[in-house]
Image (tube, rainbow, N blue to C red; front, side):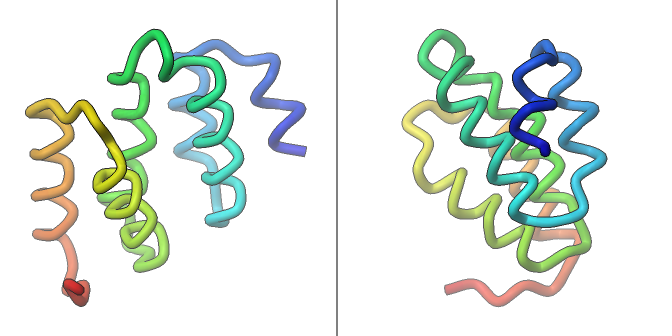
Length: 95
């Protein structure tokens, strides 16, 4: 369902969709779409997804944010600050 919905939205609407995700699987579908459509041209497009996952109160979302961040080739100040904010919001085990 998310996959069909994501295909019809613009990048700004993806941020809205990301905020409405309730499961990690839904976030992963949006992430896959971003990788396919936006990241080859604009690596900063991952920022909103990283922000939602890193600052969520859900430990699984934060773990996914760490995974996204670790695999990014290009990281900007916003991304570093987002991860720092995420670590500051909760008590997550650091591996």
